Image (cartoon, rainbow, N blue to C red; front, side, top):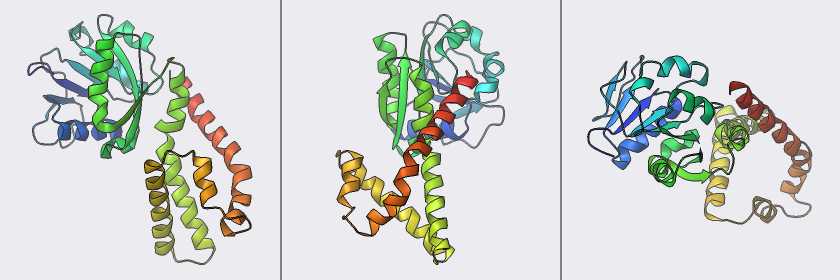
Length: 256
């Protein structure tokens, strides 16, 4: 990015803050955060309640989707063809963004919160050109893996699966710990065991590309304790998660 333009981040909440930390670590810049409730920023990152003189090379929109039109009202006129506009807002379509930024290439993105550790996954889509794709890759590769969607409508399901997915995993840890307490363990020990178990299983999955069903089978001896537990868990788990992702995807469509 050019020294004059750099990257502007509009909104520095959970996702915006997670991405900002990765950009600082990767040496991307210059960086400028625009947020009325300006948080403490890393060294070298500028910030203001309103947009500075521009335009930037990249403008990342990370405000709540319900207020995005109000949030961009003060800066849209200054954004032109030299700026790539990237939205990480759930449900806001490229057509809506293009109506506000008609001269800019636009990319939609949906990262998730493990981006803060460089362990996230970001879904991407653009109706622009290969230069926009390359620039978006440079923005999100410090946050983890990237996947390009073939059609924009896939964002709703991606949002319900990977965008919201970390919360489902945390809920599983919470439920697993509660089950341990119900079975007789003290709260602190059950929490430690549940958390470490999920972290360890995820670490195995990260280094072994074997399908998850096969990994499950490797730790399930016929007639053993794991098989007994899975006999209770599995019949309800798949439909429950299907309904969970569908509900989140439906909400993403409503936000759009």
